[in-house]
Amino acid sequence: MRLVWQGDPGFRTMGLVFEEFAVADLDAVVDAYLDVWNETDAGARARMIDELWAADGVYTDPLVSVRGRAGLDQVVAGAQAQFQGLRFVRGATFDAHHDIVRFTWDLVPADGAEAVVIGFDVIVLDETGRIKGVYGFIDKMPAA
Image: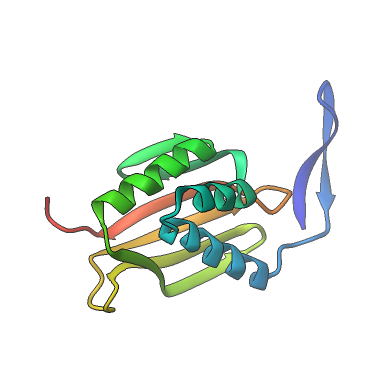
């Protein structure tokens, strides 16, 4: 069940929509989100972002805050340049309800050694099932 605005922009009322995202759907969103971070082909990554993200989606973590698909693509490309040869994998935590999911992730070497970076993200979806916001936290970061 979701609370949504209904009616024309001049006079809108609140209404309830009795549908929920299934946990399995949110599980797939997390996998697709991490796939974006691991995609090194710029064209393929842009297509993935277009499918997954709302046009005005927000990404915010302790290091950056951007709005829009192009901004997210720049952040991902920058992370890939900084952490070449590493990949994002899901961590142990996954919890979801309604259109919100929180999960941990690890940035690991290809050989599966200990994570270099560990984080915790919260994803919020819009009414179409696209990502409208990601709010990230860094739990472990290498020393500068």
